[in-house]
Image (cartoon, rainbow, N blue to C red):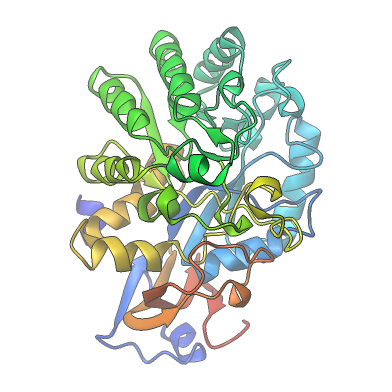
Length: 396
């Protein structure tokens, strides 16, 4: 708690002047946000996003550190592939970017990667986008991660329960003739993995939880002493399947669930079951998101809008406090993954109001279900290690 109260950035007045900011009582200085779950798509899919565009979009959103998932081409599943990604990061990133390494070769679930060879070059291990289907393989991965002092970060999805679904198996799917994804496909694998984490002592982090059952299972595991943390995303906190539209902007994995799930996730934020808000920023081309709910690619963008959305719709109404939001976006993810804060901060006018427009985002991806939403909070400047990396006034 003391760290949160005593945070004092080394503010360079020259940076504020260059950004056209006359620091006053209308401005709020916030320590740099940290997102432990993003997809910057490079190498391999630069038409969707690059390290350069993704990191600038993150800076726009007030983020100064992110962890990038390994579903790239080539997959980050070997020391050489990780080096290739790191070279691009070193060359093009304007913020701190930490790559994940894959748990299985090619994220195919058939063979574990050279975890020992990659441990010093990755932030953690994840097969995000795929659940590890083999219990024996996940047990071995956790055993090795424990020995290496690394976190297993899991996308939990039981493939045997998917049955071709692409939105939540709820009323909207039934009424509109869509194939649904049941909640059990998520929480059943979380339940399995928590038993393995308890058995192995592995540090375990659950990606983008979306169901009330997931919240309850993780809450109970924490009470029993399992070394587990978890995240959810802004869209699961503010949207549910009753709001769906026949548009690819509303398709993500896991899907938007029932209103009761959304309410349980908010309760999980309040009581500390959920440790982090991560965006799962997942950009795609306009064409890939133009095929409707059934055929569009899974994934939406979110790193530029996360703070204004949560601030406007959860902090301003008093659902959570600003201090709680800082814990979720700044301190908890950094503490769990060992990511330093340094002299990283952003400068906001929390009273400034604006409307989200996907077409105006800096990310190459423009697909957001929040298009047109009215929000409060404008970021005017982002500073990483004492250097300005984003300015609302223009390019730096």
